[in-house]
Amino acid sequence: MPTPTMRAISQDAFGGPEVLHPVELPRPEPLPTEVLVRVHSAGVNPVDWKTRAGRGMAGVLGEPPFVLGWDVSGVVEEVGFGVTVHEPGDEVYGMPWFPRAAGAYAEYVTAPARQFAAKPATAGHDQAAALPLAALTAWQALVDTAHLQPGQRVLIHAAAGGVGHLAVQFAKHLGAYVIGTASAAKHEWLRGLGADELIDYTTTRFEEATGDVDVVIDLVGDVHDATSTRSLTVLSPGGLVVAVPSGASPELFQRAETAGVRATSFLVEPDGPALRGIADLIDRGEVAVEVEDVLPLERAAEAHERGERGRTRGKLVLRVTA
Image (cartoon, rainbow, N blue to C red):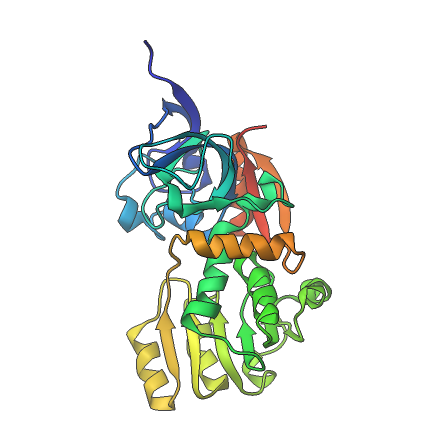
């Protein structure tokens, strides 16, 4: 009997978007405690194109060939021995295996059942696939790392991006005063999501406009105009910079200690319970995810090209199964 196969997008070398190409691969089988999910949609994230180019999680995935992608929304096709939290036919979403390979740019993925959660009932698969990595990053940074409290002032860099626009909404839900950096064209939209103040980073140095803040969620990093290091100067005593991309440099920690503030690196983790809470916020209408565009799986290279320009409002999504 022939081995079942599936469509996927793979790469045989590190490089630009052109290295991504369609392939046929064997369909995976779930091990005990795992589920096989038929992928309807897969989110596209900055870590995807960084890894494609040999940065990001390339050190974890190793040398190509490999299949990119971590954001998944789909339907449980099969469950492995011992799985009791999902059953065939369940609509689920998740960020399986991160930072190890999940292979979301494909028709099927397998992963531990508890790395998935029930998809938000009010969201389609395209919207749900835009959520896991971005929403978990924002939630874990604000709640588990910064322990954000009502009334605190939080500055979110790149507030209009995939993580940023969700961080704005989560911070507002938690009762914080929210300041964001974004281009002027996106200010009205971000105000509608709950931002209290917005700074146009193209015309204004944020440290000249914010006043003291308690928490900075830096989604830009020191590689771009020393954003993390500059953020130390706007913190109140004991305040915290959460440096999301590429972690925090030793110099950042040293400068934070000298200034009497704190800095930490951060990497998102799979988190089924948090995904359940996020789905509840979506279904209650308290949080919305922005999907700028949905492209078919075969146009993954185009999605990477657009994402790398850094002008996306919210997320780009690949539709894998109609």
